[in-house]
Structure formats: structure tokens, C-alpha cells
Image 1 (cartoon, one colour):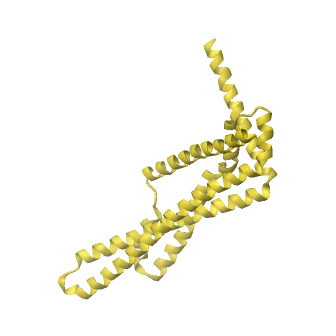
Image 2 (cartoon, helix red, strand yellow):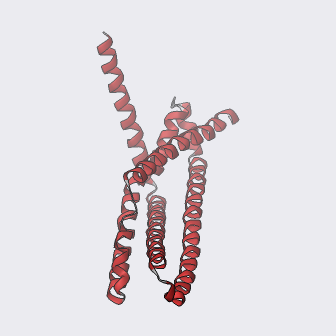
Image 3 (cartoon, helix red, strand yellow):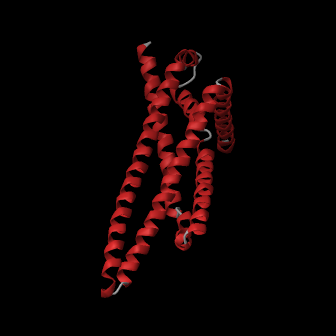
Amino acid sequence: MKKMDNTTKNKHSIIYIKNIFYRSMKIRRRKLGETIYSDVSTLMFFFFEFLLLYLLNIFRLASNSIEKSINNSTVDDIQVVNTETDLKFLLLTIKIGLLIMIVGLIIFGIFRFFIYLIQKIIAQKDDIETKLLLGATPTYISFEIVIEVCYLIPIFLILGYLLAGIFINKFLYLLMEMFPIGSTFRNGLHIFSIVKMFSIVLGIMCLFAISILFVKKRILKIVYLN
């Protein structure tokens, strides 16, 4: 009997999830212009974020190369050492600037994401009220809205990473054509380790969970106001 109950619960859960995705996709298709604008913005965000990460890694490698060169220099190479020290300071300044831009872009992206969620709730206020009257729970509606917004984020993340990689690859190819040191930065194409990938996945999952709670809280406000 318990096995039958578990099977029934699993079927209900699958139907529940299917309904959420179906409704989310239906809303996306209904508002195609807004959806395309949002998707392109998301793709551009990931493209520039990964581009900055690639550049940071390339300048980090350049800084490490100069550090080794300074350490291997003899006392007679004072002028060379001074020049390389100045270049090292310049690279440090660029790295700090890139790091600030990366963090700033992430903060802007998260802020814009939650603003967009609020806009979706306001735009769908009448639909939300109708769904609540028909018996839909705030949690169900929250999942529906967040999935509508986040559905293609993993795909855009991968696309942004690949596009940024292609762009940087072309840049390094031109660098190797012009300067012999260009090959030094080939390792700049590897910006992820397993730990970093796990951190990104964990971050996306946390963002998804926070988004659900955020939207649910906004929906509950609509319930209390009515």
C-alpha cells in the first residue's frame, strides 16, 4: 500500500513539474519580443563576464612571467629589472581594474535580475490574482515565474563561455603572429577548474532558491493587499 502511495506521489510530482514548465514556456512564447530581448541581454552578460575572466587570467600569466624574469635577472641587468618592475606595476593595476569590473558586472547582473523579476510580477499581477483565485499556490506561481526567467540561463552561460573563448582564441592567435611571447598566454584559455565549475553551479542553485523565496514573498504581498 505504501509502495502504491509513493508511486502516486511521484506521478503527481512529475505532472506538477510538467505543468510548471508548460505554463512557463507558454508565457515565454506569448511575450516573444520581451523574451528575445531578455535572452540576448543574458547572453551578452555572460559573454562579457567570461571575456573579463579570460583577460584577467591572461594578465595574471603575463605578471607571473615578468616575476620569473625579474627573479632570474642578474645584478648587471638593473635597467631591465627597473623596466620590468614598472611593467609589473602596470599589469597589477590592470588586474585590479579587471577584477573590479568583474565583481561590478556580477553585482549589476544580480541587481538587474531581481528588478526584472519585480517587473514580471507587476506585469502579471492580474494573471497572478486569477491563478490564486483558481486555487494555485504562491509557491507554484513563484516557480512558474522564475523558470520562465531562468529557463535558458544554463544554455546562455555555456554559449557565453564558448563565444568568449573563441574571441580570446582569435586574439591570442593574432598576438602570436605579432609577438613571439604570444604563445606564453596559451594557458590563458583555461579559466576553470572542477572547484570553480562546482562553485558556479552551486551559485546558480542558490540564486534560483533565493529567487523563488523572493517572488513568493512578493506574491504573498499581493494576497495580503487583497
